[in-house]
Image (tube, each protein chain N blue to C red):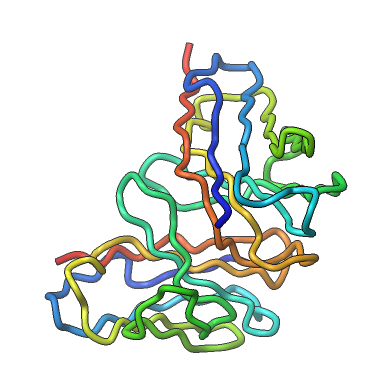
Length: 123
Length: 106
């Protein structure tokens, strides 16, 4: 059974870069053709999909982020990572990593989620 | 595609039937819609995919229906553990989007 867990700083200064890593266990990122996603949830609000990556590095980002997001993968560590540039207080959120449920299909539902990590943007 | 969930809050008692709506601003291709349950401090949990298919472990009191722009999640008889937030998500077109959620409260 696949398990995901987010890690990274809980506090980021405004205008800096938010960096998070998702560690995957129970499944090999390079061994299957799943898509690995980042999703965030502003405090008390709904969910916003940020983007995905697959084992070969193919990415797609939510246009609403206007080029501020970058997702990478490290198959040797079985991890994928998120960078969000030029953050403001409006980027304060719980960030989740999640696996797309269907192999070889980037647009799908999410069947496995990390527990989430709160990132606060504040000086 | 913008997903609008209604009502925002549903106040019911255990044993009652819950009907949650998810309306899309454009046609969702091929019933590509999922439902999730989220409890405070937890990640969302998949309940339904492809509009009406139950995920592994989803009790059969949960059912999904609909197509096109109108989708429904029905909980036939509410159990105490069903009081939570519920979100719909479409994956028929980019970007993937979620609804704003419905809170089912006692």
